Length: 74
Image (cartoon, rainbow, N blue to C red):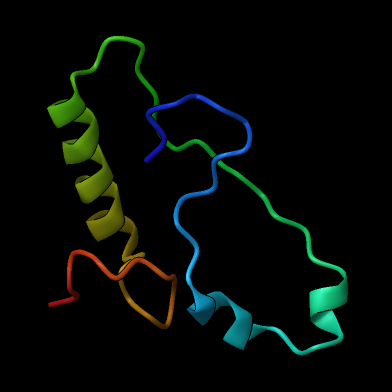
């Protein structure tokens, strides 16, 4: 979730990401940012609710798919 609107925000990456790359692959990495939902007038609570909904729908808290550690996968 990016409440700043900056081009440079990429979440809060963890060291887990590095485990997916070999040393050679780490020499040439492309990062892609995809905005799945945006709103110019959503409240903070609405934005956080949408973040949670999308994490669950896309299963991005499943370690085999993505890196989100919250909410815990059920």
